[in-house]
Image (tube, rainbow, N blue to C red; front, side, top):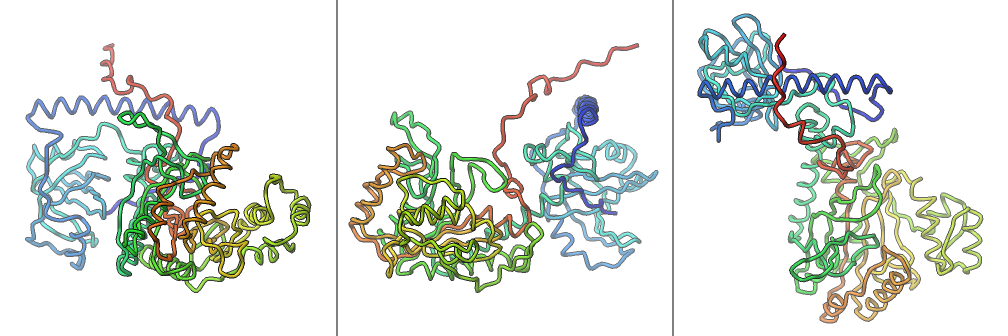
Length: 534
């Protein structure tokens, strides 16, 4: 008698205008009345000597473990096996002297079989007074109903946490998308889809970590606050150290500290960490997001291509058990090997124009003019090529495709191409028109790196808020000698979006960035005045 599936909210699931406003107002009034009644219940419980928020409950197994141990029992079986389990009350149906209920914990749910005969009058009445949303712990014996539902026959129970606010309708869930993100604690309670996406994320991240550890990478942690802006081209958040009276940046990448560790002799390192970029918010971008960065001494970008394929394959296998995913109606197979194509060749393939890093500048500008793309006078052919690719080509790639050999101007931390000095040894993985991963043969020439940093700093001084600073300590580290290395950055959130088959990054981040909630005031948490008597 388990509860039916919860409905997942989707964009556009709103009533129109006045109807929606009236429904919200009625729902708020009903919720306030329920909260008032439950506050009265708290008083009654405490007056009866019952603690509605006890400090602990000694359960002996999770609900998933209970199902694993006893799920094989046949219908109509009653056992003497005693269990202590706990969960949130999600469903309660009373049938005279019997009550059937469903509790849910993180990994599963189970039915409770509650009878007046087993509990006695007082305890049975107290169970009947429980509300959907309350947390309860139960003692009882394992049984299976005649209809085949694994159950716990309850002979004792304890209220573990009284819910003062009602859960949303058990079939409709949360209908407002913004509310789902703001109140993720409710979303996870009533929305099976939210729990599914979280499970995909957990499995994928665990798989990424396992592959790297198995291959000898050390997981490390690096600073979130940095004195300099660097490691990527992005606009940072700025904060301030009071103790040092010093402005600081929240990191926009993990790269430079990790490569310092290569200098220190840690030849394979990785970090899965939060990144902060003070840029736009849309379905693909959140100001704080999760990156995996990995660096391997003695490797180059071709080795990173193979590593990226291995990581994505492992994540897909662990999280969803397959490699084919649906992205906006298109089936994409993540199974390696992936197609590899240079940026210049892909531009020609998609747009039918010839543009390379060695195209004469006037001719390159003419191509952008014909494509109606704007550009800066200071841009060379390589930067112009990247603009065409970035604006008109990338979004048309279904993939997965490894787009490699990038213009030197766009990659200040990548090693010059071994055959063409106008290029660098860099690639990006594109899936369904979106960047999934970015990797280099890492630049380890300190003289060249200092020159690149100075170019970045000059751009920053000229007004480019995304350009980086000159990191002299990093250059000094390179002067002690960094081995040749390959480096990889993989967007964890975008990978989870692919595997979970969702279109918005907000679905895969538990607490996405939102504007402050309007209308939430202290008044909502005050105890309502008692209703006037007639």
